[in-house]
Amino acid sequence: MLDLKTNNSGVLFQAALGLQDPWRISGVDFSKERGRLDIHLSHRTGARFACSSCGETLGIHDTQDRVWKHLNFFQYETYLYVDLPRINCPKCKTTRNVSVPWARPNSGFTLLFEAFVMELAQAMPMSIVEEITNENDTRLMRIIKHYVEQSREKVDMSQVSKIGTDETSKAKGHNYITTFIDFKEKKVLFATEGKDNSTVKRFKEDLEKHNGKAENIEQACCDLSKAFIKGISEQLPNAEIVFDRFHVMGKVSEALDEVRRQEQINNPILTNSRFAWLHNPETATDKQKEQLKTLANLNLKTARAYQIRLTLRDIFEMTDLAQAEIALKKWYFWATHSKIKPIIKAARTIKNHWQGILNFFKDRISNGLTEGINSIIQTIKRRARGYRNTTNFITIIYLVLGKLDFNLPAVTGLATHYK
Image (tube, rainbow, N blue to C red; front, top):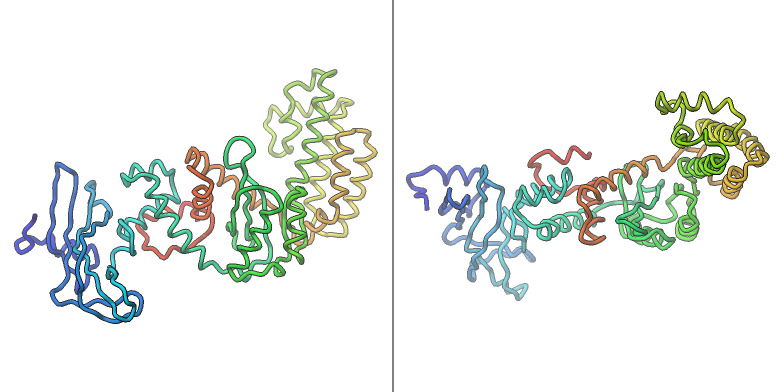
């Protein structure tokens, strides 16, 4: 152990840890061979400590050996040791550990170590966080869950009025989670397992736990799912359903592709042309543009279906509700008289959701934000190669996309990558 009387290390570590009276450095053990630095702390003789419950100041009842893992000192793992005082509070009629400024109660890590973990976990795969911190994912997830749950308790949803909802896969097969997005704050409000109408009920319950009101939701943007329509209608009574333009366009794109597949059977010229038809002209590659230039001049059902799709896309760019409704009615007549069965079916689906589609043109809200967030969620899933359970997956979604305030000191600045 270093002699603190002849060595300035005690002053250095005292300043680095931000220790104040009655806490002090009592010794430092450094082992280059073990790659480890052990810092021993103590308190001033005669020090008194406040009860963490009632605040009464009391003398020390007894002590317990405690150790906390701290941030590495350069490449060396660092630990803090202390004979932790306990007080026997007559008011509370209990014996408890005193609070220490460098760690939260019942944690084996210092606050700076936990802040480090929280920043790393927002910016990189858990496997790399494990490697950097030399900790297993179970212990790391305990830290993350604590701060995510603590921060979510403080979230105020009283001003939430416009939301978007969509499902995303959490694993291979038919395993889904549904997210609810605040359009104003551009963040995930709530995430839950499943994609049926009960997800909206759970969102409503969470909303009301955070000072929100179901009747304050004015608009809810979703896809054409019957489950979401049912859930929103039942749980959010004042919400105007807005059908997401991208999902509506997706229905017509699916119909277009079905036309191409059917026509390709007797018309091989359509082979390998799928992506040319599904891309918009401005995003098509030069090769795809050449394909379209050749194919568009032929008398093909696919070419006519393609023009119907592009026209609907142009309608969604309109900003005047009345004009958009007139244009949509004309489009519907054209599509249903096209004699192209998949297009007729898609047009009738749009007719069945007419008002919700028209609602888009009022404020032009769409799930583009939700789709972007879902894209990040898929990136989170891929970089983690799956999580042990759904709860962990949802916790990481809140961590990265919830814009939560963890009230921790900035350590690395890495988290700004996702802000």
